[in-house]
Amino acid sequence: MHSDPKTSLDLNHPEFVSDPYPFFAAERARHEAALNEAGILLTFSHEATSAVLRDRRLQRLWKDREVEGRPAGYLEPFNVLHRNQMMENEGKVHTRLRRPVAAAFNRGHVERLKPRVQELAAQLLDEVDPDGFDVISQYAEPLPVLVIAELLGVPTSYADDLRDWSQAIVKMYEPAVSTERVDAAVAAGQAFADLVRDFVGHRRAKPADDLISDLVATDLSEDEVVASVVLLLNAGHEASVNVFGNGLVSLLEAGEKPAAGPAGVALTIEEMLRFDSALQLFERTAVEPVEIAGTTVEPGQKVWALLGAANRDPKAFEEVDRFIPDRDPNPHLAFSAGIHFCLGAPLARMELVESVGLLFERFPTLNLRKAEPRDTFVLKGYETVEVAR
Ligand code: HEM
Image (cartoon, rainbow, N blue to C red):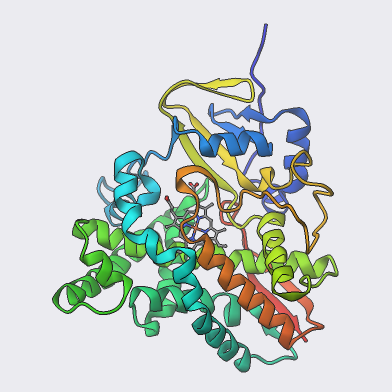
């Protein structure tokens, strides 16, 4: 009798979190996808992961979070921001929420931001001590925060708050969350929404040349505008920071440099996105029976698309465990696929090309001193990455 493949992979195990790739390779050698003890299907191959992300019968279905030990409704400040944003919706609601912001992030618009990104990157590098600095807190983190805040029209004096609130909120996406982290996420959600609601009120009264004003002028509800702004502020920097950190560490550990010329740097950015994925797991829920790599998931059953596993599949990439700065083609899934494909991909790519390019222009012999990884898997990154010229 046919029995579905099973996995007992523990995504919370410290050994797994510190280096998931050997675990992925071992799983992939046995099956493209497998069910864990909770009946969730995990995808390990590029083909299965890509199929999951593109299948409209597998959806992001938001369910308000609750936690034991806290009263019902306690998580509302966190929930309201998710319930009302494009990434947690499907179909017509998703389109209605995505369309008004899509234009602002297309390639043409993003090209126009380039001089400002170059200017900010140069200013940040002027401030570092070339004999040793943390490239995360001094460069990789402030740059995308400042860019997305300016774009939306949030004063950059709030940059530290935005960063802290975002960090507290995204900790909720990990498979195990402590009560302290829940409390921090609720407080952050509340403070974040209060601030954004304030700006929304101001722009309603007096529109300015920024994205909040554009959103206020649409037919989105107040909660939807606030949730969209918070999503953009968070998504607009959270992953970029980790792509920069993970990619730079991978590149330097491999003894490599970015490939030559702007086109070369662009290829290196794609390899940074592939090699050590900053976003590792996205969940979908079946709304109809769907067959994935031989296993059928039933309505209500969950699937975890493992982007980092897909990006190391030897069937999709040659010399998969080697960082190749000019790898081409590079069909990685770091920006997802299907209707939720990253809206900010052109902006993220431009920021990374400019910032990584300038870093190596200034410090051609850049070397890695020490890198301190975070203890999270879903959002994989480094707390600090110390480098010197
Ligand atoms: C290198 C940095 C980035 C990476 C790796 C990344 C990755 C992703 C991924 C994987 C998704 C899809 C989630 C899913 O399929 O369920 C996504 C969605 C999204 N990203 Fe990004 N992202 C990055 C930067 C940005 C930036 C700079 C923005 C700024 C606007 C942004 C805005 C969004 C939005 C709004 C969505 C939701 C799209 C939708 O649901 O239709 N991202 N991103």
